[in-house]
Image (cartoon, rainbow, N blue to C red; front, side, top):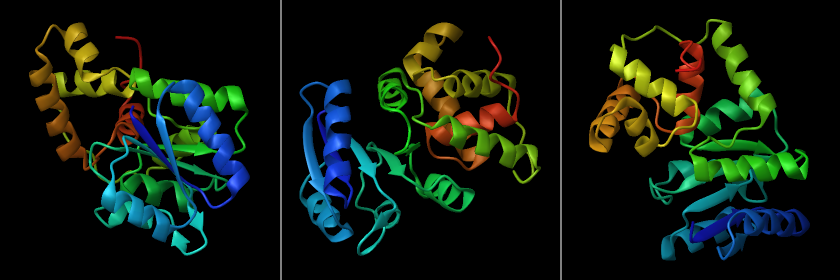
Length: 210
């Protein structure tokens, strides 16, 4: 991680988030934007590998940044918010957020979630992960799709936080082969990031030990 953009309108919270990011990613360059307009201007001129995104900003919903084509596909966008409800969680994930963390989390929990990024773990507050599980247990996931045995293995490993490289090693396959399987899985399931992959892996019962 070289650069992190923090999109947060409360200065005190923005500074606290910046401090946490700096602890997890020493030497990372930090930038702050207090409004959608500021974030848009920054993203038009620069690139951030990590974006911490508040949802409620003075000039609109933070999720708008995810739908306007300003965020590179390779950037990891982690929603940081006080909203712990389905109405905010699922639209953010569908728009392309890679994680969802509640600001109220204890500092050590928040830091651990950020550290998980280095290991390929989706940064999700535990309560948000439980909401996802409840959503799918309620039968709201829509019709199922057919995954091949190998695709299920790949999804299970990615869902447990494996990187493509680590999954390839575990399966005895080339990285490109695993990346190809993962791309197919994403297309079949209509998902686009690791957070959604973890949810689908849980829904399909693939998170047990290999």
